[in-house]
Length: 387
Length: 141
Ligand SMILES: Nc1ncnc2c1ncn2[C@@H]1O[C@H](COP(=O)(O)OP(=O)(O)OP(=O)(O)O)[C@@H](O)[C@H]1O
Ligand SMILES: [Mg+2]
Image (cartoon, rainbow over all chains, first blue to last red; front, side):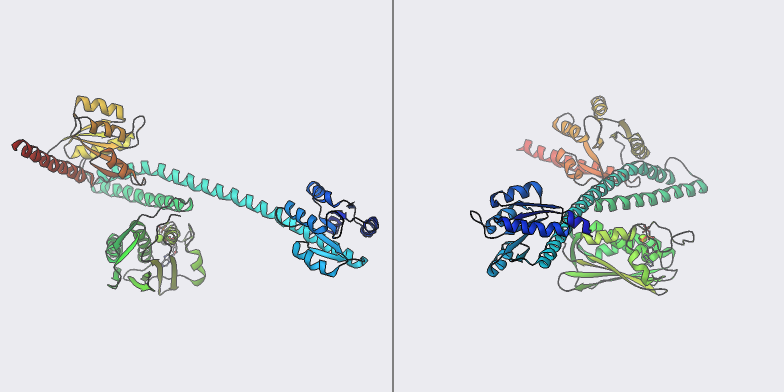
């Protein structure tokens, strides 16, 4: 807010070729408490003065010899980059009022002057002017701040991307050697040794998955994730993902079914990322469903150019109020000590980003205790674009 | 498969060791180099049948060495397989452009490496026998 004191301290310029008018206005303003009132009787120097002093208000007479108020107004408009000349015109001619407002004056006072009206209009004009300047400064500051945080964010993503890459190299060696040893190639192993090597291998692969997720997320955020588009058969891709998830499902005796109508055949997407999307949804479906449950993958065309792919499970379900948290990084609904399910909470965050990268949307419907259905809507053909 | 001489070039000692261990297990004769310059010396002394070539090397990179080897009649028939990082899109194309006979993406899968190497060697044999046949045809005419 603008304080009354600030208004009284605002710089004001009176422009009039008649000395009596000038002194009349000066008297009015100083009696009302304004302390920085200046005046000139030479219209030619108004622009120069304003350029130097940046008045909060210019009381401009319209009829002056040599250069009339309208010309001065044009000059002032050219100076004010944001296009806000703080001009209050004074005129005796009613038809000049509208003309001056159209030309960019912000308000007018009529001659002969009415003391109360003049003071009210002057105060209002100054208040608006100061508020305007305030807004301009705040916007500038906000822009600077958002630029700063954007570049900080980019640096963070860049760091994460580099970091993940560095982490993977030694990890791949750990996984590779564990695999090689565990396969008994360098020599026979006893069952315990085999088991522990299996543990090293599984933990290593889990860690690798995490690092890959972080890398992917940071790539999306740094705007470096590119789509590698190709045409492929939807059913085939779905079946391939199901085959990968199968061991997990079998362990829990969960039946995985695929129902994709034959009218959906070829799609043009980034196949690897599409599989990643689907794998995340299917593995969640299996993970959050009790033994003996069901996971069903189905698809249906929507309008001409989109299809909906759904993964339905008969699992634990999700509470309505939790749904909006699901797609955030590191969000797990059962956080804390009593967690029953493994995971990190990156899966859905990344999944959503990958879907959006394809110009699609992801959503979920769920009922606690009954199950959940995660659906993505994707275009049959994603346009060439990088984010 | 018949054992062959394989040169593994990788600047990461652990990777070098892992790839070598896996291929050694298959009975191949393994030579190791951790940079392109060492690789050149080994090739001169003991011409390998196949080179597994890491692309990013300190000093001369793997693709430059590949171009040199493919431009030299002494060495142009060595099968060169690039080791490319999975994350680096476009490296596979660069490897082909440089004259590599194929590429394997890192991280290497210890269970698939032997099969892939055998495949590349076989492809090369087929290619060679076709070329030989063509040569003979020409001579016959
Ligand atoms: N099908 C589902 N049924 C019930 N809850 C689910 C389902 N899918 C996800 N959730 C809930 O949403 C949370 C976030 O899922 P997300 O896939 O992001 O993480 P996660 O599976 O726990 O870990 P990650 O996928 O990183 O290994 C889960 O922890 C779980 O609480
Ligand atoms: Mg998950």
